[in-house]
Structures are given as structure tokens and as C-alpha cells.
Length: 111
Image 1 (spheres, one colour):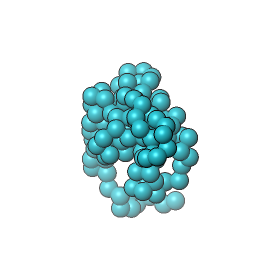
Image 2 (image 1 turned 45 degrees about the vertical axis):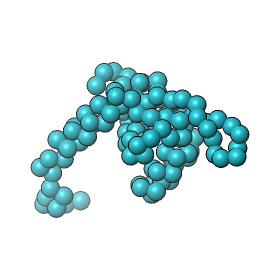
Image 3 (image 1 turned 135 degrees about the vertical axis):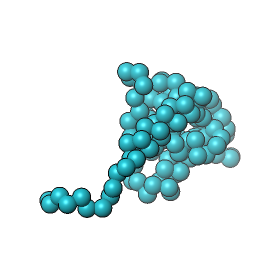
Image 4 (image 1 turned 180 degrees about the vertical axis):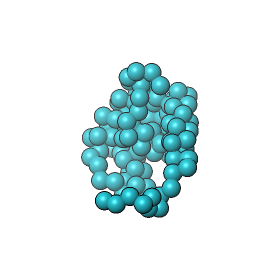
């Protein structure tokens, strides 16, 4: 990973949630996916900021699309780029390697 392109925890979670949705999605939809899957309490504004940061890094693309039916307004829709999918594969492999061999039972240390 190049300097400035490293993904933080929330960036990873947002990018994975976006990939799970399998279609261009609004920040609100990504937020709903994150909350429903992780139960994590976060502000929707943090999802907006994170999606913009991911777009700046080239991991998602954004385009204007229709908003909620009957609203008559457009909203930004996001989707992972090929670089975003490649980054997800790389991050997943790094975590799998790191977890390989980890025992979660007590290892005889006292606290």
C-alpha cells in the first residue's frame, strides 16, 4: 500500500459494506448496511466523509442518481472501483495472514 492510500478501520468497513450491496448506493444505504450487519453506532456524517475520502483515494466512484421516490432530488451514489476491489482483496489477505495461528484460548498469562 502506498503512503496516503492506507485504509483505516472505518474506511475498510464502509468499502466492504458498499461491496456487499453489489450496486451503486447512497451513503444512507451504506450506513444502513453497516448498522444492520455490525450493530455499530456511528454518525451518518462519518459515512459521507469516509465515502468522499475513499473517492479521493480512487477506491470508489461517485455519480449523481435519483433520490428517494417522490423527492424530486438527486443524491450521490457510490460504487467500488477496480482499485477498491483490489484493495479489499489485499486487506483481507493481510488480515487472514495475521490471524493465521492465533489461539484465542488463554495462553497462560495473568492479568
